[in-house]
Image 1 (cartoon, helix red, strand yellow):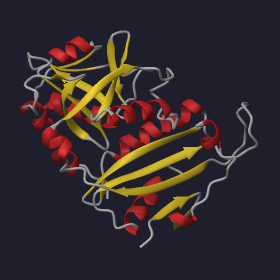
Image 2 (image 1 turned 180 degrees about the vertical axis):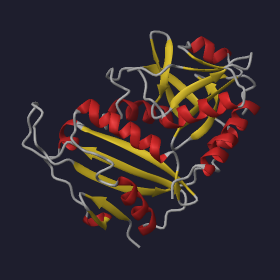
Image 3 (image 1 turned 120 degrees about the vertical axis):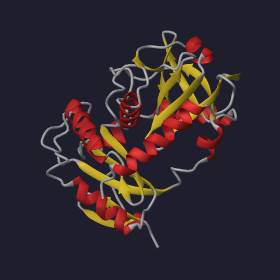
Image 4 (image 1 turned 135 degrees about the vertical axis):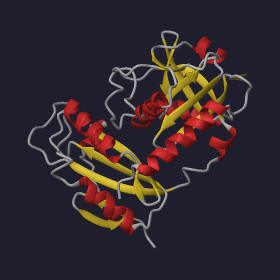
Length: 285
């Protein structure tokens, strides 16, 4: 059966889906997106994803109201049509279509696209055995807090990492870790403190990141939101990434050097199990 996608008000077979060549998402990456995980047929952290979407739209001044558009109903329907039990729903909103111009057009109708991807999220080899990463300079633009489709540099460094036989890249700016190509980066110190970079224009305000930090604090774990260096990461007891696709995934090696014991540690295992359990209690069906 052909996958059903949503394009500007209609559900259509993916082979029939069309967007104008003049769409500003295509021409300028003038678009924002969200990726929401699906477990047991329910949406993980959906209200938080919608809140971040509204913020991204506002920062780019794209006139689209997720509430009025009833994106929840559209998400529910696309999950139903594609019989999605576990995987992802991708949503993209662009400014719309107009003749190519660097000037931002006014009065446009935004383009809205959704599609699903079936994938295993709860049980993965990466979560079981951990992943290895390399580091590279962070050369992205400095509004990383807006979840735009401007993803070329992250794509390049992710592809380079995989070509080198590792999972991903951690990006470094002024000696400090910013984030990975598509996830937030964290460490656990030898004193058991969870350290993560504070939210700013320098990193994406991760939904999974926020949830994990909240759950960690609820469990009595000390959390520090501050910059941390590559040297600190290499000296850490454990390291991990968070995202809607990775949940909580351990990082066991950076630039060929083991983190801690070089294997998945108990702290990250506990946080991943806690995140999945808490997420299941809060699913949006």
